[in-house]
Amino acid sequence: MNRLDLIRLAQDVEEVEPGRFDPDSVVLVDVREPVETASGVIPGAIVIPLGQLPDRIGDHLAPDGRTVVVYCAHGHRSVFGAAILNHLGYRAVSLRGGVEAWLDRGLPWAGPGTLTGEQLQRYSRHIRLPEVGEKGQQRLLESRVLLVGAGGLGSPAALYLAAAGVGTLGIVDDDRVDASNLQRQVLHSLDRIGMPKVESARETISSLNPDVTVETHQVRLDSSNVLDLMSRYDLVVDGGDNFPTRYLVNDASLHLGVPVVHGSIFRFEGQVTVFDPYNGPCYRCVHRLPPPPGVAPSCEVAGVFGVLPGVVGSIQATEAIKLLLGIGSSLVGRLLVYDALEQEFATLHISRDPECPACRDREDPPRLVDYDDTCRPVA
Image 1: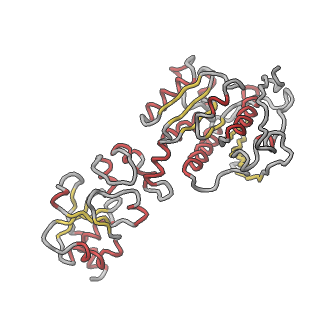
Image 2 (image 1 turned 90 degrees about the vertical axis):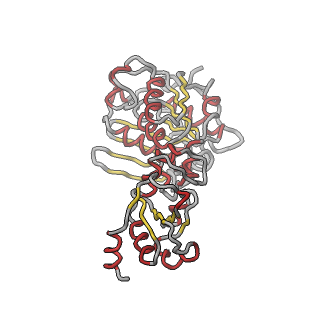
């Protein structure tokens, strides 16, 4: 049968809607590739990749008059699979919409994990990625991430981590929503002015993804609570907007061995890196001591380009998800610099400082020190 005959035959293939047939009275054939079927199949299906279908179908099934329902990811390849089987003497139809339509209806699914039908539907685009799959999605749902700050950087990071299905998000911030925040802090809205940012964040995240548990910490992070808070989580996304917090988070991470996805913004420029304790440089390897008062004005004084935190916070979320899944190359040892005015990215390589006062000795982590707003040590 030539390709033209196959196309003509495929045009005549009957399609059936998911859920409109009794799976017990038909034979299901999955013609997806192995990287796709690794995330699961319809229960009881025979799995044969489309390219192997003519040669292997006889090993599993004879043309005995039963209806064969062929399916793939979206219902395109299965039309040709059904056409091939009809040519070989089977009575075959194609499942309209394929796996996507099947999962959208919450129909039975045999996967390697324990995701519900609703979760299979919600995270279907993740599950189809071989690097994630159902096991990876399950890992995300079991993960715990602490967001330091529910402001410009914490907002996009929280939204994307929640949408991705990170199961527990802790948010630490002692501030309240102000009208000046709304230019960039997309977790919040006009009707929440005066509300604690952690509560506003909880409302937004809960409406986005009910799978996510939000743990709120309406406190100022300091040396008395930082170890207790950070020890409850797998990693920290640092969206703090001041140097005292950055140094404190860095030093606590060295005590606990908890990775930190660091982000910072200033006017039109943003930076992102990952500090993995003792496996790469720490924050003090790059900036040994806090700057003198007045050297680095805050965003309140210097201003910040409204969309800039969206770019930087999204990159932080990307790095966090990669770390949780163990995929790709992280930004450990690399500082990603983004210039919004020039629309340019640059990567700077950073190394551990063997004389770093914070991370040179794993057995002697730094003493936790509180700095005031002028970066002077608090007695």
